[in-house]
Image 1 (cartoon, rainbow, N blue to C red):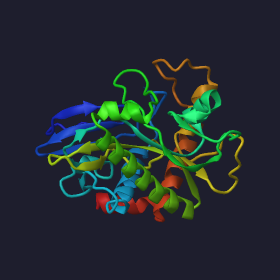
Image 2: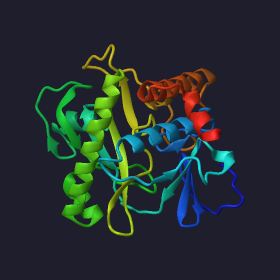
Image 3: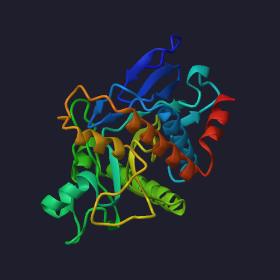
Image 4: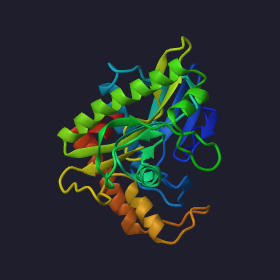
Length: 292
């Protein structure tokens, strides 16, 4: 955990800490990594800066689609967390994970194999693992405070957020941000297979994009080169660690196993490559801008 003795700590999650900064919040991304909702005992060095740098990039590049919570990544951010910290607006966060899938993978693939649908959305028969979907789909999930998130259908999202109009706004904004990010990533040799967003409402009831956007923690990034449906794909994201964790025989209950040094190093390389491909700049440029 990051120690910022002059700011009250409001919450500490699997990856981020949230501090009270008066009328704003300071969100700090750590190097911690979790799989199956359990944090591993050793970190991925530099991961927090990658998450913050990529989120900052996407927030800036999608601001014309939907407002976001970022106020600053430099001014007002304590020196100790420059590069990993963001000052953001206070929001009333909505109790739903806004997942968008452009390809059939992960829990969506398992759902499709069982039911021919994903979160209640019927799909054509005969699709293979990693196939591109006819069009991106909005497949929300719960935000579990204990245990695991659960996929729900659109009507479940309506119930969670307390109204159809707000659920439709969430769906439309999520699909629009995904479409923009997927087009940008593909131009740079990366398939954005799926991702998840979190939204909140400001004091005027306006929808605002928060948390993180299209990072290796929240997304599946596949290299365009070598993409081949019918199997799982190599990736630039946390799936590499998930695959390792699954191979150990771990039962997915705490405590999580320590990640071997070679897996840590390879994961770090993948996160850094994702940043550099997507932003078109060396990772050091982000550190120079934020650390001075």
